Image 1 (tube, one colour):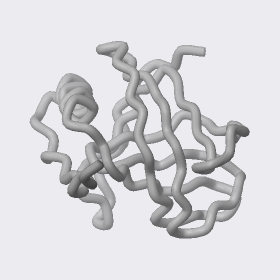
Image 2: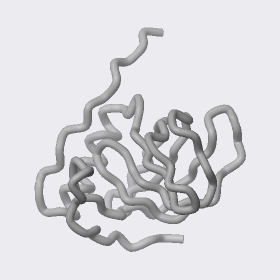
Image 3: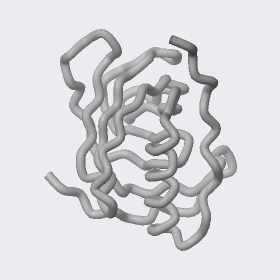
Length: 129
């Protein structure tokens, strides 16, 4: 089901930047598990997202994320770490190991919706194979 993007309210003092909801699809699962967790559309930022879900996750849990940006139709696949959990409401997820192309796509999507340049995404150093 396709969700329309909406601008969120101004950022709270604890947020680094404003959030928007520019996703048409989002799939989330625990790393190492194929079961998808039921969720509602999130707020997206260059560094992560808040996902509405009644499922409890401990801080530090690693999740696999796959979502499609509404405007550009770019699919992003990445890992995220739970930074906080609001029981019965949702979880704050920080992207980890977000690729350069995905980071650029998110930045462009946010820029298109907000009308201003979003903050640069800080990526974790890549591990050598």
